[in-house]
Length: 54
Image (tube, rainbow, N blue to C red; front, side, top):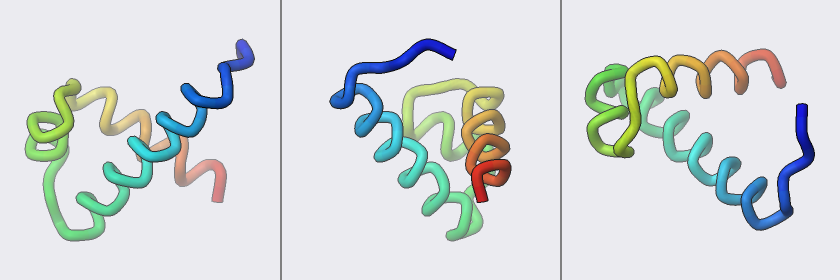
């Protein structure tokens, strides 16, 4: 894995936090993806990565 600049790393953490919050509210992958401007698979990957880190 490549090292990201600190500002990009913090932006990714913020994005992951927003995805996690929306998922905890009960939003589906498609709803989150549309709101965040990404694909369903990106949402799934972010959630999987967050679960692995816990």
